[in-house]
Length: 329
Image (cartoon, rainbow, N blue to C red):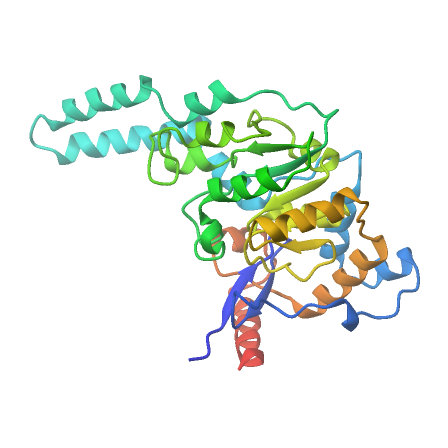
């Protein structure tokens, strides 16, 4: 049964459609227009993609977090986060007719002050040494479709770290940083994707270092030899900065220049060897890819986060989504 999938790019309200997340959208450089120079080529690209490229490549500007990350931080931290807790507590009091509210208070306090994901992570984190060669691996928020199903076996990010660890040359390090919303969404309690000892298992791997969560993503990307991700936005940002990317899953940008698709230890070592020997990505190829991407995508939204940034009315959005479905059919 033919299936139409919509995926947001998190570039303005731009989206792409496909039939199979394994094959992905067909975006290839041979469909680009002849390259007539940087300025002329950029001027031929839609404003949102052009601004995304300029923002990501401007050394003086730190790229803004993806919109949904900013939204989550606003909702689950500070006063807003406190309101959620108060509302939850008040609902418990008004609904329960027995004394279980006191049990909830007691168990909450126990959870609040016992060892948890954050305390384990912070006990292992050390500041990165930018004088060493390293690959940057930002962990994915889990559970989420970006790693399951789109990561295949590498939904197990410890397996991904092990694969990278054995592939790195002598003297290279793997810097790992937790996703900025992992603890906000899920809380600090251990669970199946972040069990007790999860971060320690990563830190115990040869040449692997856990870095503080507040470490600048731009610095880690810019100073790395490559970025490793399953399907994350960090990979897309690295591409625009002409940084090689090791992908372990099926992101929409998998056919972009500078991408190495990793299937296991052998393909990972082969990719890292090429990077070590001077592999580079040209600005011309990046801009040509943006030209093709411009034509292969459309404006629209399928969730509230997309709607917040979109200038489309609900009717205009419906028309664009319908047109995308018809094009796939």
